[in-house]
Image (tube, rainbow, N blue to C red; front, side, top):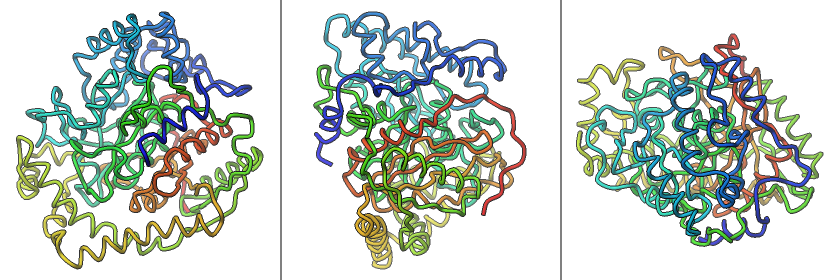
Length: 539
């Protein structure tokens, strides 16, 4: 995608906030009441010290309008989020650490706003970073004690862009250790550094991974925006399972420099938030869209009129393997999209079995290459072999699950110079792109939609994850964009709708996602329920 495309989209869709004329706007009063009723604390509502009575649902353009007229400061907003972290995070364990300079960053933003020198829509906006994104002034651990000492020497490129845009780096979030690429049967949201992150909707359920802490923190309104990373599913699955929005950008749109890797052929960082507007504005900064400045229209509405989905063709990939209740939700979702004017046709992208067969063997080779290169820049184990030995000799690394089978297979995998590996990756790239391109072309689609996730499974270290979720794989392997927006609930547990499009179609996908978000209107605040009984059967 050319650097101007997201900005062009934002400008074309109109100035202001994500307030679509006539659209119902959910408020936080009910969410705050639910939180106060169900949480272990009796305070911590979302209006703390900000003068905003709807922190859960306010968008960045609305916040910037308040900052521009002097009725809100970044300092007040940052204090509100820090207080919510102090009160709520002990329940969900999403945030590993807060940045001790956050209030100083906010004060600097307030000074820029007072003098008319605000740097753009993210100036003064609190952002949480997944703890596999390098920060020179805070540890970056990938959840592992092996990296828990000296911080990296420099910030990741995306962090530099956030700082240059005036964002307030609020802290770092927990994640599935090594982004779920250590054990054959891991438990998502667990790391030796941060312990287990819990799903804010039902606390004994899993948040999915590996961007577990980023998604759970957003669901609990602990930040305005968070950054996740994905190789296959690690942004969109946590977004879906925690009822927020997550965008996996086209491969290469956001710099991978300074992000703990799995595979340069699939890895990307991406924005997560509670609404599509904030995701789009954050993507514009992460991707280096220099046109995002005050005075540039910044709102992203579901459409320029009430018919934002009219005439759009969406291919629904139902994935009944995710269970009858998810399938019923997809039926209701299709009905709502059709009622809004979209044409919805059922599709099944081809080549999925072959993609599943080839993906991990290729990733093993790439991980060995890329993690060795990254570890050579850090204090601690200097390569994968030494990392495996570290885990064997540190019992705290094995308190939830002991295995490191993926590490061991990667160590033994063919090098990326091997012809057999190269053939696998070439076939993966070809089939994954054909899977989406051929389906889109055959049905004249604007996007393919599928359930992002099943209802969250019960967290269980002994069993591990119950997470065979195929919808993310085609776009992840192809390097194409995908976007998860809230679709609804199954037994109190959020389910997302995953939208996929061709390469460099991020702007069009975000526009479509905003319209879908508006018409589904599926977000609601978590209630921190302790349990909802046994898991729903699949199939």
